[in-house]
Image (cartoon, rainbow, N blue to C red; front, side, top):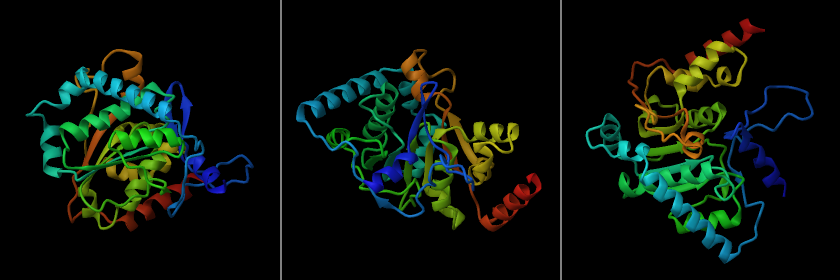
Amino acid sequence: MAAAAAVADWTVVRRRGLRRGREPPVTTSHPDAPPPLPLTPIPWSPSDPSLDSARVSRLVDRARAAISRVEASRLYSRLLLPDSPLRHRLASLAPTRLSLLGVGSFESSLAARLQLALAALLRRDLLPDASADLFDPVLSAAECAAAAALGFAVPRLDDGCRRRAAGPTLFYMPHCEAALYDALLDANWEPRAQLRRLCVLGNSFQRYALQAEDSASGPAAKAKLVLAAERFAWEESVNEAGAVDDEDGFVRAFNETSWHFFEVDDEDADRKEISSNALSMEKLSL
């Protein structure tokens, strides 16, 4: 259907084994340029509507096996350390919702199953009272049913990650492109204090800042709000002190992944100033 075709470009592509969302296009006449991310939520339904109970059961079993693997890993044991700064920040934020965005096909991808497993464990052990949802336009009906069996709701609208937090929320966005993080920040940028409700677990904002320095025309440089937020975000890598297990599945699932909490105050520059500066930089680069 037309809606499904529109949202397919929101999601992930394979690059050296990593799953990343496509960047929205700049203004161009190129016939193959993908459509932009939806500015408002649009209806979504699985492109693969087949629903076989045996297939769903196998998928749930594979997800639970991944949960056991992550639970036994160095990465997860480090997250459970009671006196870690991360645990204190999570406790202070006290998320009432966990949203897993851009998870990809966890039926076909081991990395996606491990990422889903981490989300399930975070909810079970650190956020027991939080509601949980997950979304990616590539999800099949069988994956939606398996997600429900694991305690995750699946929305029927694609909001392109423009999701405003109604309360303290952990947004887990594994290996998404900078444009998707930018869309999330855009939905929560005003008033600036709204960012205090967010924790983002995903690609390193510091890494994006370095990429923007290396290429003024690259995808990271276009994510103006990610770059602005990086300056006041508290960031900690999940691979701190070599916590990511040295095996292919874990490296692909969690490399360059960081926690981000936003330390904002009323004296921060407002968005208009950032937008104006960004526009001036773009004009100078032309």
